[in-house]
Length: 481
Ligand code: NAD
Image 1 (cartoon, protein in one colour):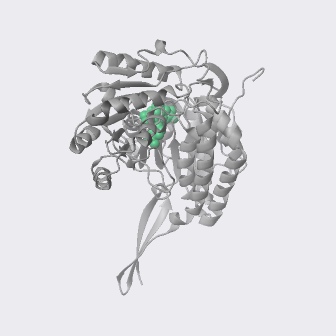
Image 2 (spheres, protein in one colour):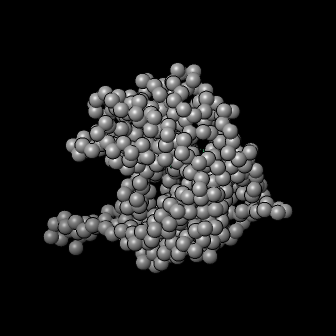
Image 3 (cartoon, protein in one colour):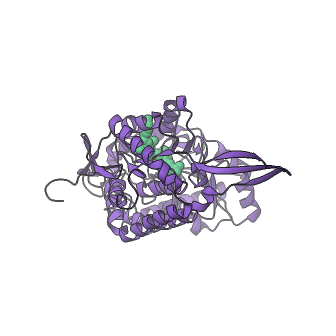
């Protein structure tokens, strides 16, 4: 980009509004600032809630099929602008273009279509005959103004998974993207300003503790959905406690990926490496299978296979379609990931391969935030590196002897987002689906998240999941005839 950096603006009440304060957004592959984004605060939060509140009566009164029409237009826009949006997001957060262009944009175009098809579900109720002259009815109603707070690792996807369903249900929406990577969502705002009536969809960027906090405390906000860390979920719960707001929380994870000796080991190797913790997002994936549980009889073989698979990963410019692993999103996240490398060493985990410190890694591009794919081995699942979410390309391998022991280790975690099981034994597959305490269990696959199936967690990984019904509440009517 020659000359001035691009400046992105908030979308409030149908207008693209400059913010009096801005902040730089950085390309994590090079460490260079490349654009400015609004650093909104209480004033922007107030304006967005006011605009969304004003738009709510007309939007919620539209027939469901009229709302569906708007949602289909968003899907078409995702198809038309796929290349532009994918490149923008990759530049902003380092998620490889292979994933943003080939996986996220087509997937989200599909999701907006699906949400359009579900607009009718949001207005379906039940009839209950309470007696020959008494009729019970239920009505589903939107909450009102919904605030959707999203993280930086897949902004367009998390934006879509929340906004599409919230809008389908008849809510008006304020999206708060993450300060580390807001550009793709703010660009979407420019495009969507032409699609929705003013105030139906608003986007305000800024720090979580500033504009995010002001939004969740606001009395005009009726529903909150967060995808982010457990600590943020707790902070939002405290901040909004006075107003008792319903929440949907999709939070962190430390997911087990369990390999039994009867598995197809080629598929399992792929499933625990490139489809899991060493992905295009460099392990910055909520469902990353960052605890790899391996049966003792195949322990050495699997460690060797994982190392060879990781040696084939291509770290480099995420905008290059040949790249298979990108950078860490920010300087702050880089410090966090590398601090865990030092901790693993201190806790006595054995380095199988990868980086002993961040400085060990030859940067794929100068100036960027790079960490090599790294694997530790330990017998002790109570180590902090086994219990805490690292959110980088760092996994821990843990051996087990029996199915019961595998389940016990897998469940010994504060988190419960997802789990993977690799086995050809159908009975075992079903037992583990039953016994693993997590929101999703994948068997002989990993990281498939088809829209239409619930995606959420248990324990510290949150509760609820984004869907049309999640953005409605039920009202009862009893009619004496
Ligand atoms: P984060 O919790 O730091 O930030 C998430 C969002 O919350 C950002 O927009 C941030 O600005 C906002 N926020 C922070 N503090 C806030 C406050 N006090 N009030 C209101 N908003 C606030 O998380 P992150 O570092 O951006 O993302 C990584 C985390 O997200 C990881 O824990 C990861 O597992 C999780 N994640 C979960 C899923 C899922 O679906 N379960 C998906 C992706 C990421």
